[in-house]
Amino acid sequence: MTVRDIARPKDELVTAKRTTPVEELAKLMDDRTVGSVVVADGDTIEGIVTDRDIALKCALGGGDMKTMTAADVMTEKPFTVEADTGVYDLFGQLREHGVRRAPIVDDGKLIGIVTIDDLLVLLEDEMHNLSEIIRAESPPYTPA
Image (tube, rainbow, N blue to C red):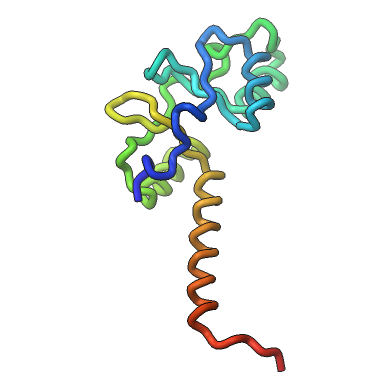
């Protein structure tokens, strides 16, 4: 299974421009129930803004969310993952880079995103499937 198989596709991705006000980014995150916005120019990734970036650079740093833009708070050139990367390799890369989410690229073009939350849901689904196999093949449990 590759990252392409599990990534949220580009049409579900929340994106913005470098000039988007931080206040608007926060509203986008709230409206779409996401923790990040990919800053992009078409299919080219310029950065990523997380809810943590906003909290630390605006709220804690004393910045003004009305005048600051995505360019002021984003992580430039964020870690990305190639679409054909295996899911197992993805785990190691996320750990190595210390990130919870990664935009997915195919030949350098933005095609989606994958998050730790997505991976946890995938793992839970797979564990449920495995437990159903075990239940079907095991004798019923009868308490003493």
